[in-house]
Image (cartoon, rainbow, N blue to C red; front, side, top):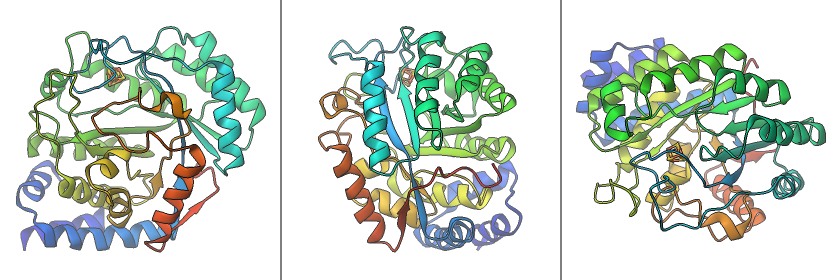
Length: 348
Ligand code: SF4
């Protein structure tokens, strides 16, 4: 009963302390998850009705200077074919996406120095000029504050930077020494201060993760109050040091989606491709747990397989229109409707 009363408390106050989150994460069961999901869906519907926002994802480079231990496109992976989209290819993805009804473009890539501030600002301002009614989201990792500011001034609205774990020691177990938790957190702070709508996020079931770490993540989100939060189960990639680690729990990911909705009822919360990879109905179930965003792929089909962050990633063979139609049908099957909308965070 303690777990139920904590879910009730979160539903009423949107706030718990660290030890209560720990207890929740250690003692929940599937009936508690269903209980939390029912409450989460009421909040989702009160802010967003049955509308599901779509973001058109453009994976514009799989070149990265970093070597994160969990990531399939890490620098140390000698097996994959590397690619960069040209500005023309990126614009062509946007054109196709616009025609399909997308009003948010997400430019995601590794930390590829070729995409200097000058080049990135050129791309962002070209999209801004051509599609003034669209939101531009960037997800290109850690950059300097000055760089974030320049991209914002060029027309970017939102930035996604998963914090990965709110525990500094755990962060060290997932990343090489060149990357620091303090810097990651500083980047998130800089993005917030500049005026971006900010998205953070973490993997569920990453190696060495304990309930205490997840409790820390929930406290961080409660305090930082991001506009968006992306979570998905950890899925190993065969060319990484974590190749033999088990995947994260599908059920726990769904439970955490519900908890996040209760922490911040107006949160933009994607039902991720990783969730759809680990379970064929994962994305539908994510929405039924409280998520309200899906991110179909707009990248050119010929490069999709090269952006393999983890093994067996789904939707790497479909055309953009197929991805959109597939998600539309999936959402309709659970009584939801994909909408053509920028889908800003409420109040922005
Ligand atoms: S997680 Fe991001 S920064 Fe780390 S290796 Fe992968 S693409 Fe690069």
